[in-house]
Image 1 (tube, protein in one colour):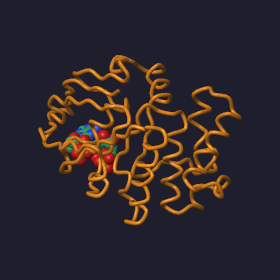
Image 2 (image 1 turned 45 degrees about the vertical axis):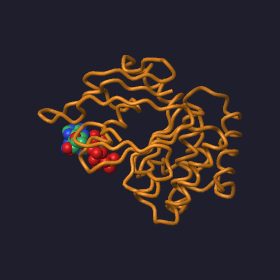
Image 3 (image 1 turned 135 degrees about the horizontal axis):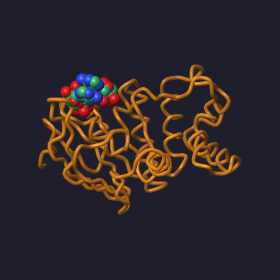
Length: 218
Ligand code: ADP
Ligand code: ADP
């Protein structure tokens, strides 16, 4: 489903990625671990089309996306890729329901269909009583679940999560990884997760260890 071949990235003098290759199958939950500065976030951003590589190729379901630019890249990202960040970046002026709907509306799906799907997702995540609340009225765990629903609204091929539990207490962190497992079971959802959370890494199917810009052989 996702394939990356020989990804290189340099920031000025600093060679952050030194030829990273990986492959992820549909329905897999894969964690990336490694010390701070190893290049994990940079890799995730490149695979997630938020940043470009200097060299290398990326494919999602056989489509090469490293060559896409601008509008076509944005449309590709919105349709095929979901993101969950440590700081969820929910829009403060919009309700939970609207936050989840926005990527669907941007993708051009029918307003009512998007709303129904958003309600269904929020219901699955135990948030059906929170549809009209603004982010600041929700707990940290609830906010992160809204962010997960938003990541899933366009039925992405893969969800990238960068330290998704980094801002959660251990109870909410456990709930979030149970949720990922549940979403895999229900929708065969694929996840690539950067995490320092040992429990979250251990529940994944595969752990990739990054060190100094490379993925180590396991
Ligand atoms: P990790 O996620 O493993 O902590 P990062 O990918 O965030 O690693 O960063 C790898 C290295 O690249 C770090 O030394 C970081 O400071 C540097 N870096 C990341 N993004 C940029 C950037 N936009 N400009 C310059 N240096 C960067
Ligand atoms: P994370 O918490 O996901 O590891 P970081 O704090 O490493 O994220 O990076 C946050 C943002 O800042 C990213 O977009 C990254 O590219 C950028 N960044 C990280 N390190 C540097 C750096 N040394 N110089 C410029 N930008 C950086």
